[in-house]
Image 1 (cartoon, chains in turn blue, red):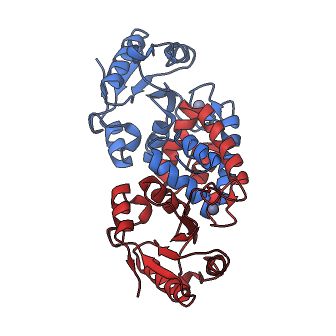
Image 2: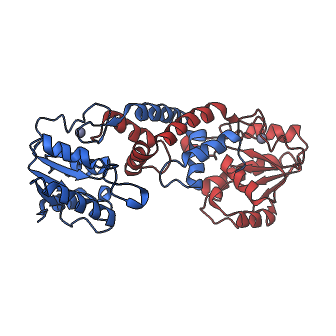
Image 3: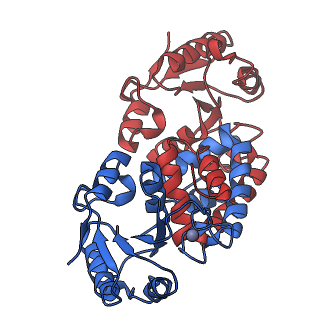
Length: 199
Length: 199
Ligand SMILES: [Zn+2]
Ligand SMILES: [Zn+2]
């Protein structure tokens, strides 16, 4: 780099954003400096506000600025079904499809022994405790159809079935190896309707 | 959107970045919230610092946190040649090629009558005044090889030649319709070496 130190530092810092390489980071920095300083200042302020204000829902673990998220707080949701997903973006994808009316549990990841991510790290005990406390009739497993997602689903299936609760896995309308949050709403709705009871 | 208001606002605000649509903005927000809050806080702080601290060089108009940029302040540069470019990123591209040792003048845009951008908006009078005050022997026009860039070069050529100063245009090694800042250093070096005197 050969800009001024402050510009170099901004270019470097922008790379914390996903899929932003050195060239995009440079373009972003110059765009803000040359054409949209106001937007840049607003972004700084909003990052500060959102990152300070957003925590996790005490029931479903999704991201929210309230103690409990708006889905868990919604009296009209079916409180007997829990859909287990890997990330808050997956919750959003399901909500977009509009056909699911139950609750969620967000793992915030998947089992990955190599990275030291075991059942404790993805909150399995919290999930099991919820199943124990609330009158849950069915657990829908909607982890990603990847090796790790399948392994995670398999692990949870064992635990939940041991409690005598029905477990289902969303149908493989979701393309294998794909990531749930990028699937269109129609495919997701199809996958949800086509779910099978795990036996 | 259906996340919490603070997340919605961050997603919206991230769209001030170039080439960031709703889906990328959402990915960025979740990435920071789930995996890199520290990086996000650093980004907020750096945006604030850089956008507050960086202004323009009083000589060449490029972005710098000093009154004059490091190129204008460098005694080893050839102060008899000025290369006119559209943006600070173009200065960087030339510096990367390593073969240019003269000074720059950054228009911060190009003539675009439709958008109300005339000679005053791109600092043409500052450029002419510099040519008048300093012992400039040659002006190299390195505006982009686009319709607007060519029109801008044409306009400057007229003005500078009227002052009896040599004007050259970089060779069309730069692909037509392309943007200078994305050209590789070798092509740029070639384009600079192949420049012709405008007659
Ligand atoms: Zn919740
Ligand atoms: Zn300068």
